[in-house]
Length: 149
View (cartoon, helix red, strand yellow):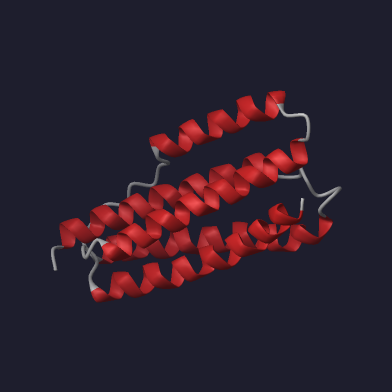
């Protein structure tokens, strides 16, 4: 297995995880008055994202790579779009929830693409698979709430 390819894929996922962390900061305290039941799930998503980030950085370093601890261009554009959209949204709570669901879906797709690429060593594939499981779990909580609204 080519470590360069593995490190590249892991760095892409690190960027996406950093995008999630940045995106979560935009959601902070925006919907808790009307959706207080989600606060604990949200806090768990933020905490889990920090763990995911740490695990990815450690694995990148173990594979002899240099962690690209930044966000992605696509993530920056999405966060800018969220700002614009929220500036004009009539129902900010629902718009915020839609953005969480959209961002989580994008992260799930990227993680699945990483697994499907064949560029991950077995150890990396296990970590990515575990992280994908966490992403799907958090996505389903917010997707179910969005569907009820």
